[in-house]
Image (cartoon, rainbow, N blue to C red; front, side, top):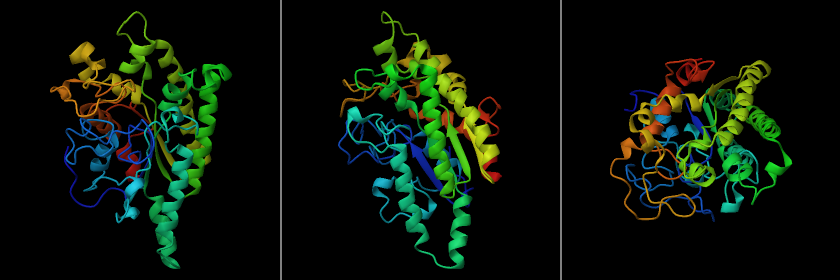
Amino acid sequence: MEVVDGRPEVPCFFIFGDSLSDSGNNNNLSTDAKVNYPPYGVDFPDGPTGRFTNGRTGVDFITQLLGFDHFIPPYANYGDCDIEEGVNYASGSAGIRNETGKHLGENVSLEKQLQNHRVIISKITEKVRGRRLEIAKRRLRKCLYYVNTGSNDYFNNYFLPQHYPTSSTYSPDEFAAELAKEYYTQIKALYELGARKFVLNGLNLLGCMPHEISTHGKNNDTACVDTENDNVMLFNDKLRAMVDQLNEELAYAKFIYVNTPVISSANPLLHSVGVRGIVKCCEVGPNGQCTPNVEPCPERNSHAFFDDFHPTEIVNRFVASSSYNSPSRSYTYPYDISHLVQS
């Protein structure tokens, strides 16, 4: 996948989410959820950067498909980078709910990511005055806003009754509804900050992750944990309906839903390698992350998962390309990213 020649398709790209998109925001936090060490980054040009995979993340691939000649910098160290081209706020273990993932240590919840975005918007607008201020606001409305979060609200919250009371407080449908309600409020806040083009990603089938199978599966069976997948799909159904609602309610805004479970199930890797598709590629510790400085498997392109939770680069590439240029309406709704940025 090569970088597209010429100017990017959008003037800037802002990224919100969790470890699937994190590019280093957790590196200096006091948390178990950080991966700025080998073997992470074994296939990334800069080595370990804080990306939770062996190479590029899905959002890295989308950045390239949009035509950027560099990756979007993490908020934690944007420094002298051109913040007008975008910032990555994603944080490993973070979720829609503020308490999610906190048993692992610090993280940057979606609410805090929105606060960080307000800081960036202020820095961008304080550079300009008068007529140029309106030009800056129009530019921000043309940017792409990518949000991929909610997984941790399940496997680092709802599925952990020993740490969080949510599963005893809410039924699965009630929790999905509560989560969607909070997410709706946060997305509307992002709209109020000038966002108009949104990519909202559905949650993958968490019951098919190696960690969930080994922890909550039955009798060492390699089959997915159906009850967990059913819970996730309750939220995804509400998220897709929310996309319709937001498209109707918010003037001049355009939202798309990425149906991640459908895209992932179409990945030929999962069909060609069989059980290897749910076997991680590195030796993991108690936290499900790769043991530091231990060599990963040599055949990374034939594994779906790098560690107990996170997909390999080849899977990230497939999901990103399928959501950017979708061959099926079942992958993205009501259209794909390439059409969103052109609208």
